Image (cartoon, rainbow, N blue to C red; front, top):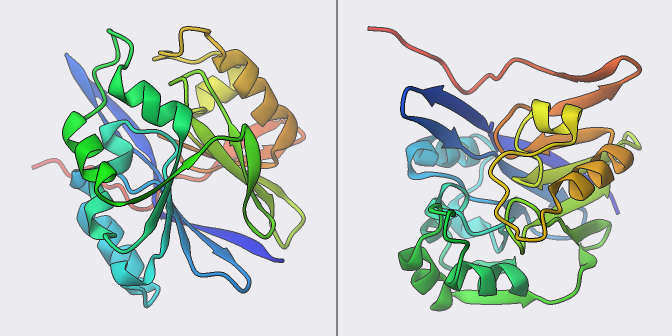
Length: 230
């Protein structure tokens, strides 16, 4: 089965004095013989970007029947209400963690958790498995206890990892060291090492797509984010 990905919203993280804007990547996955799958749904601030990107591909939110959430931080799940008819996959470990997050983790949302509880929520209990033919999920703890990623081999025989915040930026992949690590077992480095060993293409949670070359990881300049100074 051919599996291909299409980035609808590019991830980014813009720092400013006293805080940051962190807009997560939203990725459409197409599997031959299977309906479109959405990996994460992003932040309210990128809602129009997401809707417009779907429309450009002749898709409506109602066409999305499967959503896979890497983890339950608000910037990755805020737009889940656009897809009320979708089956929503998230790890059981992440669901449990989101009810009682680490004290320093302020990025969850009990309101979103309550919304998800009323939807067609499917909890994943296995550490790894197959979501659709040729499309695999895998536990990726570090950022949160229950973070998961998706991985597959594309038609060009490239190994692709949709990392979510298991790998947020180029720096994390290059150094195998993560910021904002809320998993008490501190497994980010192990997760990043697995990604580095098993990917030719990485879609980070908050950075443009990364490509392996003989000289290291490279990326294209983002196309969906423009800084306008007035």
